[in-house]
Image (tube, rainbow, N blue to C red):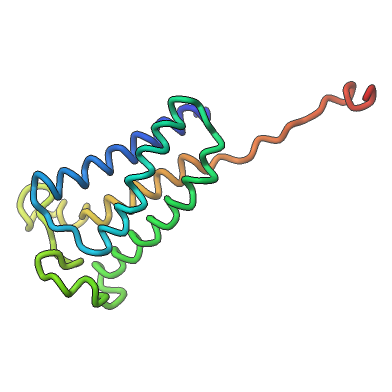
Length: 153
């Protein structure tokens, strides 16, 4: 897969995540918790920046978007660890009961469906950030000078 394709796919992931979060909050009326808001802060600009970079072929955009994606992934991992019971709930998530971090929103049908317990909104966010990081983590391309050019120069 070439760099242009990876950049374009990373943009599609960021765009889908952004539109998905807007769908859940604005259409399905799910109240985002503070950790969800933090992840949105990092995902929303990625949709715009990666979109522009994909259309102009700017591979140098990685230096700007990788830190955003890494920070977003950090928040997503923390939220999942909290949801899975590995870390205590932070106080910010208990202020508003309607937007508690551990609220099991029925994303896929009813809240009791197995898919809802496996693919929660925090898991989807974590997958999106991880995909963006993976797609944009191509190795640096070394510029090689042919021996004949090096000898002549």
